Image 1: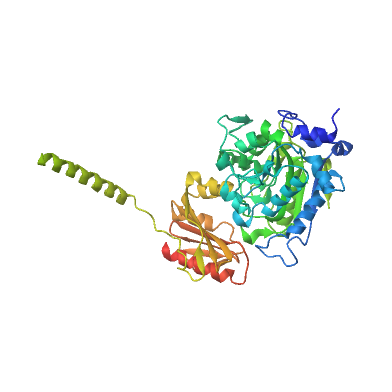
Image 2: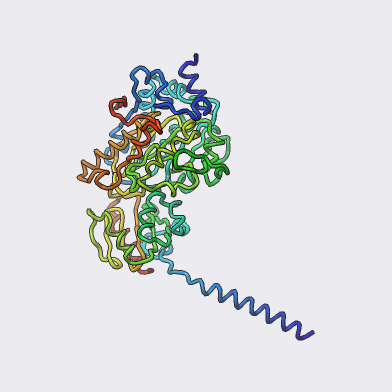
Amino acid sequence: MKSRREFLKSAATGAVLLGTQSKLGLAGMLDQHAETGKSKVVVARDASLHGSSVSTGTQPDVKRVFDLLDRAITAYTGDTDALKAWKSLVPQDKVIGLKVNGLGGGGISTHGVLAKAVAVRLQQAGVKPGNILMWDRGARDLRACGLAINTDPGSFRCFGNDVSGYEDQYESWGKVRMRLSKILTRECGMVINLPILKDHTMAGVTFAMKNMYGVIDRPQDLHGNNCNPAIADLNCFPTIRAKVRLIIGDAFSSVYEGGPAFHPEHIWYPNALIVGEDCVAVDHTAWQMIARKRAEAGMPTLEEAGRPPHYIATAADQAHKLGTNDPARIHLMEV
Amino acid sequence: MKFKSNWKWAVAAIVIFAAAAGTGCKKKGPDPFPASGAIAGWEKTSETRTYAAKDLYQYIDGDAEQYLSAGVVSTSTSDYKYQGQLEATVDVHMMASADGARKILETGTKDAKPIQLGDAGFAYTQSIIFRKGTMLVRIVAYESTPDTPQALLALARGVEAKL
């Protein structure tokens, strides 16, 4: 009988869950979730993350980012010590990919300071620096996140699909047939998903599951019908399902209208991290945050705006079984 | 012998002429991006990148759909910096028709202030969007400073003058 930690380590190789259709993925198998039968999602906030007088362009305070990350991870695992928590979440002997999202340019991309904070904590938890790989579609996206390209294995690596290329073989699930980035298929033993919370003119909301559009060769083909069921289908790809194990979602800043591009007139600062393993529960939580902000701003709902994120419900249905979008089955913990 | 030599020169001349004529046929559109220093305080900090409609997703992914449905032909973009600090990006979308530019411009301008720029334009605190003929221009600053609105307007006027 494997302990939870041993299981997580072996699962990260992609061998355990490859091709499985478990209802809640890994989350459903964890002791903590087994106790409640719910998918745990942590929303950790720091109202002072950007200082006292936030204005567009203000960057989050580095020390506060580390503190917030530690608070989120310890709340998630139930450990009191952050490094102990990290050690329970990641294997020390695998390459850990940190999938950021730099599509929105300098104004609204995953904050580099968050990616670096995660990388530092992974290193402190025993992962070799060269086994930590920050990645996205290409160099432009990574620069937008404030990250510098580095292929030297002596330190944290950082490069995009434009360097690695894509597999020749197609992978498919449902209606989606795509080639995957070699960073996902060949480099990474486990991926931590670091999306940025945004409104999306097609999908309604872009966060954890939508960030997987950055691991395939032709994302432009998957935007029809509000990206539904394409987002759900893509996240059912066995390789994605097996390797993308944890979400540390960046909601330091966000756009609640006009996304995925940067629209400074619609930026807001949730000053939050959203952590979980159930991508559906995480995206449902993210959607509710956007919905509340839009209501607060007197804007129509995403449904009224013609772009309801129906892909979230699709991802939870009996065909996809990627997680739960049922609030009664989500253990939402706000810290 | 002399005839053979002249014949070679004639062929070479024809080849050179044809190449030159071919180049001339590819009429380049106007470069709408002001050079560094052309607008007071503004420096052009990147090369201009141009995306054909079919490749626009590489730049803006899902956002490309609304431009494609409005008939975008190509999009060019370049980064700028004002007084060494304020960063901004200029996107110039060439549409197939003025209607396409109008369609995008009139999307989501509820809180914007109309400005006299091109055929029509709107300004927010940190961004400006305007159209001129088939061209649609969007300029976005990444920081809100007291200088941002005026600096953006000056840059926008510089772009508009080059269209």
